[in-house]
Length: 128
Image (cartoon, rainbow, N blue to C red; front, side, top):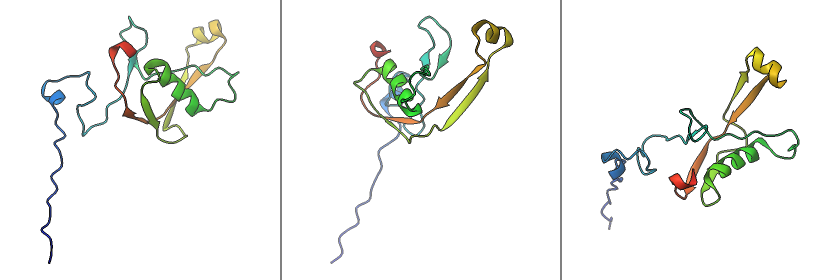
């Protein structure tokens, strides 16, 4: 005898956080990617991805380890994040203006971007 087929019905991707427009919840917009950005400085109006300066003396540190440390500084150790691969998904070369170059004896910066997924934990305003 053949068993009756069980029809699978997926859960809705629209949550209570979507209905109440809770912009601080991670339980929202489940069909879309959300990006984690932080204020550059607490009183700044500028937002950016978490960043960390990788000093030259840290030669044993890989780019991925530096990215993990940057996220850990912002979020702490209670959050479990999975980085997708060891290579950056993108990079940006930024050339400083001439006066900044001369004043600081630096030409520019290279910024590397890594993709990661939040596996467990919650981002709270106290952790930021």
